[in-house]
Length: 184
Image 1 (tube, rainbow, N blue to C red):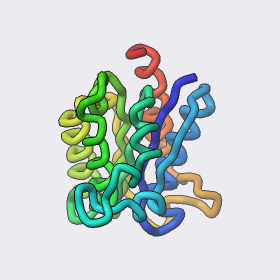
Image 2 (cartoon, rainbow, N blue to C red):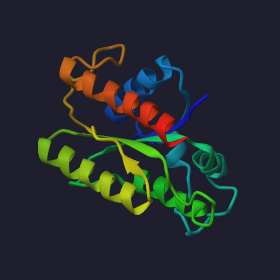
Image 3 (cartoon, helix red, strand yellow):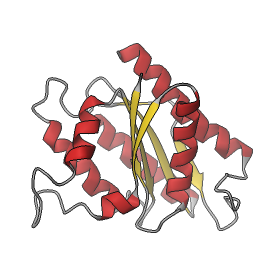
Image 4 (cartoon, rainbow, N blue to C red):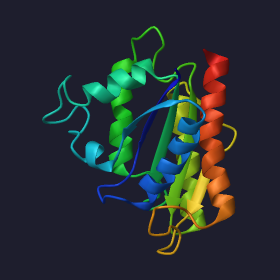
């Protein structure tokens, strides 16, 4: 089975970012992927990488899943035109993969999702995620999802109302799964 590790969200449960990530995860899962999710609640409990309270045990389950992952999904809210500190700190834990046989995200497709209130923030956040993915030796999928969010973006069940945005999110999950099969 293909393992996809998904990380992203905010400290606020059921954030737009986590809802968007869930749609991409579900899309890959419906096609047979095994998904391991690390949400905002998980990431909020990670000490700053290399800072006070950081140890090899901190984030060890996430790091081990990233080590075993065939593909990765990353979702970040756009904060002041870039990714959130929460997501950046979680990605810093990939440094523990530096000396692996497959260092960092080497040879793995990475699907990217950015959510923000404005179009400019979604695009700059998505571009930042692509830059980080390249720095970590990952392969960003051709489609990345830049989702402009408002209070009306999602319904009460967490489903996105905009058909085009839903298709974008589903395609990101599908491309990660499909590309993971090519890289295996």
